[in-house]
Image (tube, helix red, strand yellow):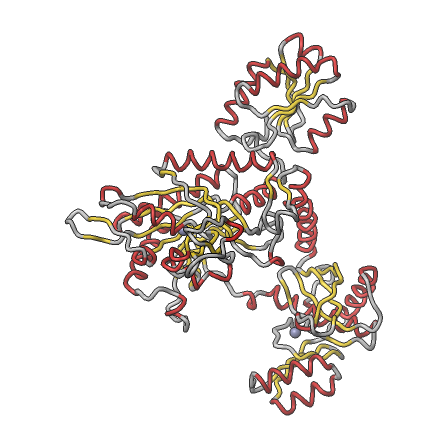
Length: 615
Ligand SMILES: [Zn+2]
Ligand SMILES: [Zn+2]
């Protein structure tokens, strides 16, 4: 049941945004007559336009520009297209007296050899542009756009070029959609994992350690530990076994795997050393002959393959499911790093499953089911599946995909059948396959509609032969297993950044770094608070006492700010009756209950990994 998606250009919203950009340019030139133009494309949530404005402008000038845009919209200017041959086109652009447009027109005509250029006129405004546009400015919703920021941007993104002024805008077909977007931006800022992680003390990045190499604080480490515990249990029930592999490895393994040279640009450079040198690490460069090269591992697969190959395998051993929270290192460019969402060192919820061809479909389905169990637990609803297939028409076909038509046909068919038989909806991603086989990506959207992959379920028929992996089949013949690569919880780093934003920092009890915070109403009851804490800790419940000298209301507010799922108030009544007064995060009603009953209740809630939202 593939879901077909229409292309962006076909959408009305694209024409609206593109047309708004022309209106913005016209408004800016009316208000600041000597303004010269750069580019003005539609973007994900609106549009922007780059200008050289004679006097500097700031965000405080935006309302006046918006007002001018509304006047232009009210003029019902009609968008008219004209296509000109190179000679007339150049003459037209020269008359426009827009040096940047002229530079671009020359490039299109002379370097790229376009046979003609298209122009759009609306009212007195002329722009060289491909379109498409709306019929007239009457089709533009005057309350559907908002100019929201001003930034500097180099002409064509090149820092050797002139710096232009970029005006960004949101634009939607209706006021309601615009408001929803503005609301989402506010929410995204509040939920940004970097902001929340700082407040919740999840991780820090130290300059002394290095960029993209987060240090996990005690609270963040609880999140990692709980996720690993969850993975251990889920994988244990699904028949996985656990392995552990080192962080550094000799070069040859990555040559066999193909990471070198294909992937070398995102690997850390090698450490060179002599195996027999007595000099130690500091003088590792000195020795006879060529040094050994060791690399930080960028992926766990080759190591698991070596474990598979370490003994003779029979069809009776398969499926063999090797799992590891493996730590890998990738040299992401500094500009790409982003909190813990994009880092250089990460621990991955990895596993490699070795199957016979006839086991592939069932095993692929079990991996899909495992994903569904996790996602239900985390209450993820807004995601879709994308089936990544080979693009048979890709001109780079041979270098982009392993050249083995029969295996492609077989594995693509099996994966598609698995999805159909499970009754799952999916989008077709032709050209989205991995180098070594088809895959299913789990695609999520952020609050701001940015799409990203949380996890993949990949079939690999190409790498096992490179490692000479074999098993003895029923009839005694030697065969090559197929491998499934899967990591439903991705990496700790990416997944936790995602969970922080998903829950807005208010984790369910089982995951929360502090599960219960005990708040005595006055220091007279600190002793009883400690008794409660001891009772909870004896059942492995993470309980803290806030006996700081601040006032009681202040400490209660602190518990809410820290988004602790359960605050326990203890005073005279509670101490005398061996009870606690329970306040749950986000729930108005509080309840007083016996301490022993509370312990049983929370233990069960944690055991079931429940997210309690009401009494
Ligand atoms: Zn245009
Ligand atoms: Zn792998």
